[in-house]
Length: 250
Image (cartoon, rainbow, N blue to C red):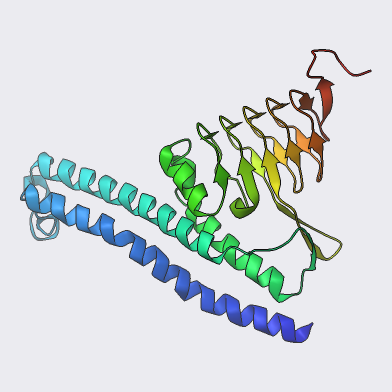
């Protein structure tokens, strides 16, 4: 156990400069755009320091502000795309099952999740959009046509499959992992065509949600739950409140 802790701490120390490098590389397009806008508009930000601020035209402030905003958004998009690529490359190819928390399998999983955490700097501002969907595809998620993802919390994207026209509500959480009893539990999540996952709901690992099924807002679907086609589930823990034929369970 002590040896594992030492290895874990050592790898953590290595990760920090690596992540700083990723953030810096992602900033390159934004920095280029910033200076390109100033060049095209003949704006010199250095004059803000060398001149009396009251003599600087307001237009120069406006242009510099716009250039800064464009640079930040470009940086954010670049960061999300880079994290998606790296997350997809390094995602763990693990079979469904339980793994000891203090194991190199867990370290591999945690490593892949780091890229998702970095993407969260900007991902919440990019969902729903084709950029958000692209990020999840690059991270390994299988997305059908017409999917609308309003959440930045599809964790373990490589173990998530969304059918055609699935809608994921805002701040919904889909986990293909959980930790319990000193173990990392991994199991894929599959959501069928035309299903609706309500705002703020939580889908736990191993769940299969059928076509046209509805998960109500803020419902919590326990692990390894199988929801048939067309049913409506709600509550904590989620239970069926309407069958596919429109009847209510007794």
